[in-house]
Amino acid sequence: MISRSFDLPHDSAPGRRRCQAPILLLILATTAASAVHGAGDWPQWRGPARDGLAAATSRVPSVLPTELKPVWKRPIGGGFSSPVVAQGKLVYLDGQNGKEVAHALDADTGRELWQTPYADMVGDEWGQGPRSTPIIDGEHVYALACNGEFACLRLDDGRAVWTASYEKQFGVKFLGSKAREGTASRRGNNGSAVIAGSRLILPVGSTNGASLVCFDKLTGRVLWKSGHDEAAYSSLMVATLAGTKQVVAFTADALLGAHLETGEILWRVPLVTQAKRHAASPVVFGDHVAVNSHTIGLVCFKISKTPRGFEATEVWTNRGLKINLATPVLVGGHLYSQGANRDYVCVDAATGQLKWAQPGFGQGRRDYAATISFGKTLLVLTEDGQLLLLEPNPQRYVELGRLQVCGNTWSHPAWARDKLYVRDGRELICLDLFPTSTAAGL
Image 1 (cartoon, rainbow, N blue to C red):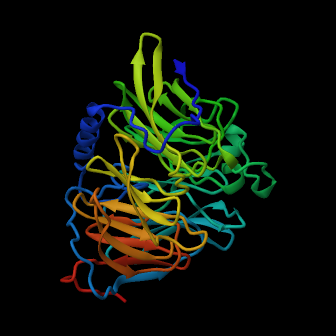
Image 2 (tube, one colour):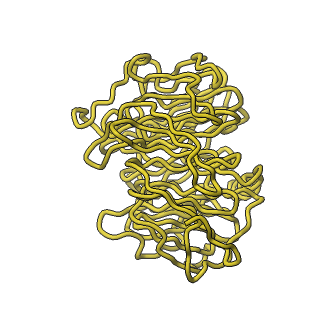
């Protein structure tokens, strides 16, 4: 194993070109491969492959209707967790009567099928309730509470199969404002688990050898524990890098890869930033990993294997793109995302060069937008509840439509069954974007 530290060079110009044509070919190949998904479900954080790409079977919206009426909507409790949809069911998490609660609905009608309290509700000055996005996998739902309580529930009736506790099993306690820095122990557990085959990996964040913990997803048996980093707010990814399948984690202290089967830390790049506020998920393409935060900007590394072990080598850095909360989406060799200056940006993924920036995304402290790619179009839900349809054009910003669809939101929408499911601070809403569809069930 080779651990490579990373210091931002003082002379790094934004988008300094440090790579050759092969990286562009890898990006284009990865984009094409990621577009191949299963049926039109949205079972986990950022979609079928956790990359913000809609399933290949999805209808592609080319315009937004002039008037958008909800198919259904229902009041919900507090929290910032995103909805997920699979097998005709929608699952969301919220706060109810001092508890964090998992709910399952009929995705077509919004009718509640079951609800299961699974943890005490906690929060901070930004709000209370669950923040991590659940996962629907086969016959089960996996839900993480703000305070580190975790539950595997049956999808058909919500009954608990197994549970885990960050505090009781691994010594990681939610401290709230008593915590000294902005890790998950202060702001709550936002990062979502990831499933690979029979394994489920959680960003537990224990500094005593359990930064990452791998469980048997059906029984809850711990298979391995690894690392000494605290958890931030980023969700995990699984990818094959330099020929080895691994878990990619953006912790409070570093970007790293851990062997999927054993948990061995294969490579690690220290990325210590102000308040340790790493919120975005890693973007993986070929053997490259890009991450962003409000301190380091947007950074890309290449993972390689040498006779000495694995290495993470800086490919490019754009320090001006201090994107705080949003995770970019890769389309056609370019990254599209909410920017750092209340704007929306397009970045060349091969070089880090900013292609364009469009102002007017966010007001005041608002700095989040969620992006879903359909290949030919992008759906962008802004923090203030505006839904935009954009063309992924690396030459210029092209807006195809704009509608107000909900209130303020930090929750990523779900696109499933050719419908959009959005959540704000008060309601969960199902929207049909195709003009020929008929709204019902109001």
